[in-house]
Image 1 (cartoon, helix red, strand yellow):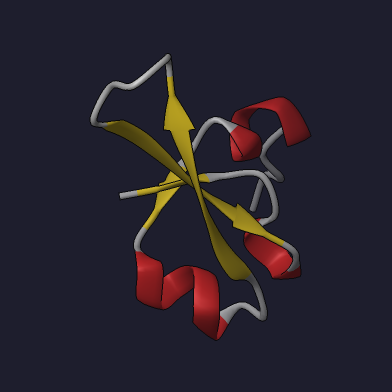
Image 2 (cartoon, rainbow, N blue to C red):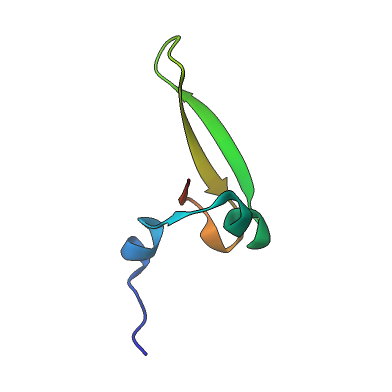
Length: 53
């Protein structure tokens, strides 16, 4: 079995339950000034830095 490069792994998205199950926390950040757009990222655990769907 081939190992995926780290850059490819960080480009993958995870679900909120996968983030939490992997030992991470979901960090929600507002995007822009006064907009209602948000980004969700997994912080810590095995999915650190990945986008949460």
